[in-house]
Length: 191
Image 1: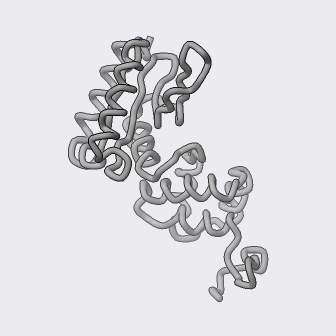
Image 2: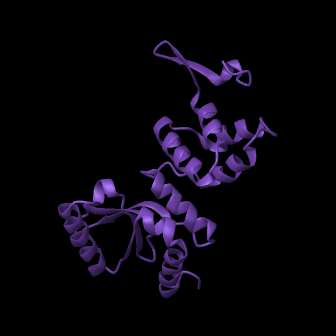
């Protein structure tokens, strides 16, 4: 066992000694790069239902360790509603560009009150939706047709839909952020 683990950092699951969810979050959140750490933290907080106040307390009680500044800076950005690490990375990219913090998992209801769309990120009041299109769920012709029909319905309701791929986030992030900012300005976000 690692020497920096206290007895309170360890629990037993199915006869195996493992670190507690708080200690695991503490370790994952200190590991660079920061954007990847946020994706891991969002997933873990969602899966383990971690109270962020307890995580913050743990971090405060362990000052001076490697990566401590990174996890302190990430805790305010943790969102257990994120459904994939790339959604977390996209949200962080937007926030680090000093654009307004987007809401996660925006539900859109039809006239009968049934959810017909749920957007990864966006600005509900301004009707701007941001979707991360991972190849796993958006590569087939059938899925693309479904997305196009859903987007057309949302547009008829006044929504602007931005679709983002990993390639665009990596290779064209400045252009992507300018597009988001333009739509925010056009919809009066800064007034």
